Length: 136
Image (cartoon, rainbow, N blue to C red):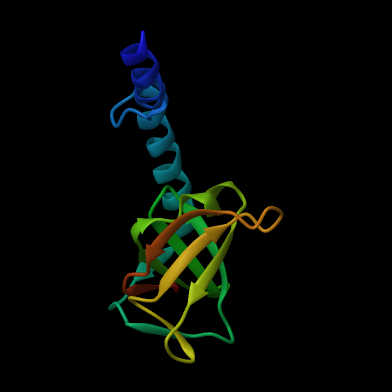
């Protein structure tokens, strides 16, 4: 009986873990990819840069678990892929960054945080920023 009680939390945790290739997960990934394609429609990618100035950045907008878009204006946005997952921002959590300069740079640490409770829902490092400009 004692062994069963010790195994129950492990069994429960495994039963609640998301399956990497479950139909629901695949459907969610497809939906997020479609949303990202829609957001980038009419824009052309440029050469990636390491940093963005803070003052004009709006966002981020999350697409899936690792893709973030930062909008500068209606003709320019930057896309970054994170290392780690700040997945909470896709559900309304705030992205709190720990910056090492006056700019938002690749390698800066970020945390997705529920501002009502103060709990972190994820952490990640920002990647390089690929500019997307509206095609003329």
